[in-house]
Image (cartoon, rainbow, N blue to C red):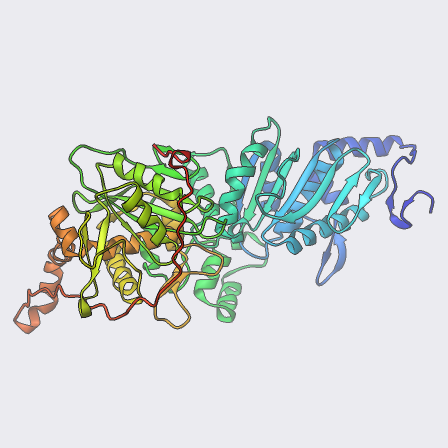
Length: 550
């Protein structure tokens, strides 16, 4: 028992002298060189039906092992129940045993999940022969430290999980299910440090879950836009799975669930505002210039007409303050720049808007003034004296009507998002996107659209739990703005008439049996909701020069 770690007969403690036989030395060398041999010969797993048994990896699991061995960056798209965790455990254990001072981070969407993966690694370790074990220095639910200096720890995926640490291998499990804000923070603040090492490795596995960061990494890898090697596993790669199994699984779940979880389709969520078939075909472009907050897809062009719609948050790390720059010169409209930042203070945010608006030919700016947005609009209007700020006036049942400049009367800088405005904006946004009257460009917008769904009451649309819709709400505001008389006069475009003309032939074909065609266009919208109030916060202690986007 003196050789055991804390009395565990399956674990060898550190600083124990062992006389290796010649055969054991040969086995150590062979296992070091061949991860597949190591797994097939010495790794044991727990099977639901068989209990503790030797691990016999399938061909696709061997392929993953080889890919990880040959590439620093690997991304795996895998169906459910394909032995993903077992494969990754075997790979990580091999690296820890045969590489001194090798630090491994197991990160999952939940801390409990990452600890469960570490638990499987510990089980495999306990069942290794002693000649392959390193002496144990630390052994608990959250971390393992071995005598050769290798360390393995488990945590939830977050911006702070591995910050400041020297990590040799990061394993990101079910990365598609990590909240979007956490994905963004991780890749902007932590990932560059990890990937900058000459030998550090990143291993990502997941089942698809909409068009999020995992989707982007996968498709960028397929296009050769990043350094990830791709490994795709199909449900039929698993022995015993055939068409009969597929039919049975669909019967017990649904076709949509099977398509996502087993066929690994990057489908949007159910009940999305934009039709899932349309979302599937939409593409994004890489910006020509970008920093942490601003992405530019097209620089300002002389004589082009631009509009900016603005959504504001409190800048405390939750929702984003966001704005989108639209080229409204002609149809289809085009998104040429986006801004998204969840830490910028509301008193500094107007300067970022101002800089972008001035750069884009003094663009018309429409600010949503619910809650803290009122402060942003007031600073733009009163302190920065931006003249192309869109104003709104209430006209009874006609609701809000918009104009620009420093007009008087009952007009106010910005617009309030009522349920009626949102309903109209969502309806128009759906129409212009599905009829290809808006070029999106931005991946983050596409990702938000895949999780912008009908609420539980079915009365409106909003982001799914844990997701964001700040950029999409900028699009909703623009769609609502596009059917306002002010916008038609500004751009000389009547988007509703344009859509009608686009589909006129189809309408004629549909109405031929009736022998008549009604070409009338109803261009009257009603707004029947009233703003119920909201907190108005003002602070004038700010430095405009702290945020210079351009």
